[in-house]
Image (cartoon, rainbow, N blue to C red; front, side, top):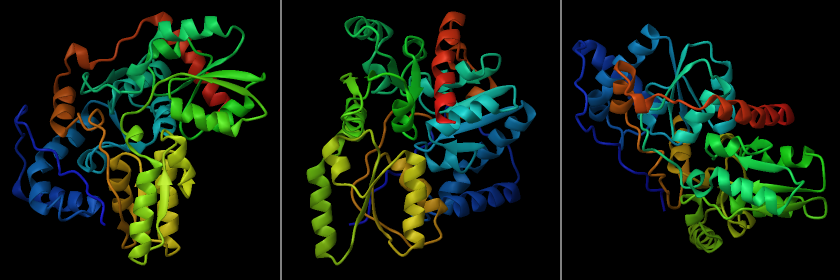
Amino acid sequence: MAIELPPPPLQRGIVNHSSFSELDIEKEAERLSTAIKQPFRWSLETCRSIAPLTLEINQLKKEKDVILIAHSYQTPDITYGVADAVADSYALSKEARDAPQNTILFSSVRFMAETAKIVSPHKTVLHPSPEAGCSLSDSITAQDVRDIRAKYPGLPVVCYINTSAEVKAECDACVTSSNYLRICERLPGNGLIFVPDRFMGKHLQNHLAGKKDVIIFDGECEVHAAFTGEKIRTWRKRASDAGMELQVLSHPECDTDVLDESDFVGSSEVLMEEALRLASAGKKDLMLITECGTTDRIIAESNEDLNLVGACVMCRHMKTTQLEDILQALRNPRPDQIIELETSVIEKASKCLDEMFRLAE
């Protein structure tokens, strides 16, 4: 019943390695192996093969005054090999806002890199994989927001952070999976429009029932939409038959039937914290209903012998970026790897994000 995680990404040979001594490579490989804590998937041999990449990336970050920020869904070689900050969207947006470095390299999907540019408009923001989009972000456009606002005049429009800069520029407040309930509760008025995640919107509707009317959009994350309540019930029965008391932890981008079957609901960072807390309390039979990267982080950061069960769903967009892409972007970024946004979009989207920080903090 152990969870099936994807294999390490294969190097594609798009950049040449710099030369490092055998001793340096061996030390770096041991560091990577110790940090990742997955000797069968990320063997010492595999870590040796990527050590020249991580060594040069970390060297270039210092030389070029770069902070490398990575979302939890990135692969372990990135999160534990080269990232300076790893977290969920809210924490990373603050990290980008407050970073002292002149350049931000965001290993993630495009909307996150755009968010970094919005909160740090005078800095250079690099996104190594311009093709790395997001099914949820791509489900809505700025015109869609204008249309739904015209249909429900007077209602504030709240957007999930998984949206483009242009969409944020049309909205009144932004939220993340760690603060959307709190922020929407604090907004004035008896109603709001929530875009684009219909599953999170349904959860919000239930949470605010009798207090506020919530109009929702019809977008979804292709990863979290793959989970169902029936699948959880099946896994619970299998676990119970095997003598296990399964703890199910789910991300709020899942459908209501999934959340109803879950023991805990939270953002990727909060899910990790709860999993570590449960493990330390002796509850080590865990099922994570979210993207694979959260499981990788729990394995790396737990001191317990965990029993992670179920199926893992990988985000093809989040897994687009590899170490080679990061190294190439640090060495000589292409124009399409440098985030550029219109000044008017930055100014309007900044107000949307500023409202998030104000209401969340």
